[in-house]
Structure formats: C-alpha cells, structure tokens
Length: 277
Image (tube, rainbow, N blue to C red):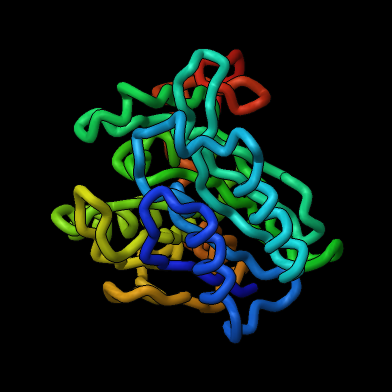
C-alpha cells in the first residue's frame, strides 16, 4: 500500500491558487488506484483565523478534494475550515474515497490556544477512523485522522487505538521554531500505539510564521521510513499493513494499556460517551 504526503507551500487565503498547486504537485507522482494522499491542515487557505473569509461554506474545497480522489482513484485526506452553527469555526479534516464519496470527517479536538485558535474555532467532540483498503478483498489499514496540535495529546491517539486504529494520519501547519517537537512527537505516537504515523506539514511562510516542512512517515516500531526537507514536494512510499499486526503480536505492549483511565467514548467515537475504550 502506498501513501503520498503533499508538503505544499500554501498561498495565504487563496483557494483557487492552492487547488491548482496541489493538482500540479501530483502530476507525474504516479498515484495508483487505492493509494492514500494526505494534504496539510487548511491546505486551501493556510492557518487563518479569518473564519468568515476562509470557511468552505460553498463547498468548493470539499468538491475539489472529492474530484481529486475520483480522478486519481485514490483515498484523499485534506484539511479545510468549516463554520459551525454557533458561529465558531471548525478545523476540519475530510476524507474521500476513490469514488469521490466522503467517508470520514474529523474536527480538530484541541484548538491551539497559544496561537489564539480557540478564539475563533471550537474544538470537536469525537475521534473517528476510516478504512483504507486497495480493494474489496484487501484487509487494508484502519486510519485515525488528526490535526496539527492534536499531536501533543497522547490520549487522543490512545482513543483512536481503542477504535482499532493501525495508522494515524495528521495534516498540519506546524511552525519552524518547534520542528524538533514535531519529529519527536510523531515518533513517540508511533511507538506508544504500535502504529504507523504520518504527518503532512506545510512549508514556506504565511504573514506571521515560517514553516520548515519535515513531513514524515514512522513505522509501528518507531523507525523513520521517510522524511521531507523544507521544500515543497510529495513524499511517496510504501507501507506494509502486516508490519503493524506482526509487531503487535511479537511485542504486545498495547494490550497492557489501562483503558479505564482514559476518556470514555460513545459508540460513535464521541468523547464522554457511554462506552469505555
């Protein structure tokens, strides 16, 4: 199974330019049927708090991602801004199947208070997963999406593990000053959960911050399988679903977790629901 992580230099609040940029970056990459493409957080606008301007109320970015998935015949995960009924934004991750259907959506649970995200965005209230399979007969991988700052909260990933996650896929706008944290935490989340972790971070600059890329894929044993530098590129590599299962069987540390000490989830993944994880 093959993943393609798009590390783009996002044009500030310009959806058309960013759609075109992603489309161009994927030309010649060799995305095959059933592959997984992961785009950064707010891939269409950059990390803007101007929710009224950037939210995808007309669905143009969702439609772009849907069309991209259908054209490539691949699964595509991408970050956009949504507007909630409460007038607050949602930092949303959408996932589309090779047929262009939306199969998952996740709202970032942890707004970045230090960056004032919580003033304009409300956090989500549930964890979700989706099935990435190359065909109907393939076992594939169960993937848990997450967004940027979520990476600092291991309990969210443990909740995803409780939902069967074998891979965690993050979209991010993680700034250059804390690049070392990004790399260390990506490796830690892989080791803790004995799962693949992959992160699609942006590069370049916006009006406020610089971003150093560093998009990464880590194995269930904590080995860095692939890592990008600071330039715009697509990081493509193969992952073996059996690597998760064999490592968990060989060294079953994940079974020793105390689920009773973690947040409870409902059957729909809602935090604080009635079921333990």
